[in-house]
Length: 119
Image (tube, rainbow, N blue to C red; front, side):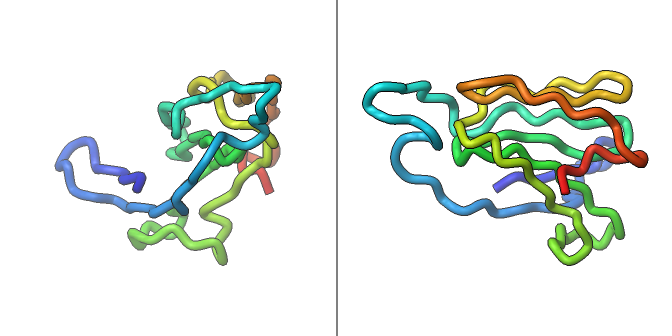
């Protein structure tokens, strides 16, 4: 479970349960073993979007746009990019740029219409 807290009060802003992952990370095989952590450290953009990568091979962008305490797919508050391999290292954020790494590559996203959402 990933939980976002209010920095001033410590109150929960939202929480998200991810599906359990079993076995080797995405893309791992007996010939290629990366064995990353289950999750990367999250990175939070100045616009409040939380970026995190998982051993499921997905890099996520999360934001409670309507501030109702629930992340909803129907409001595009949970978006992801399939890296096909487990995430390795925290996402990096710079002006107009987001970079994520998998066990097999670097993925760079340029800002598009004010958001780094992957969809």
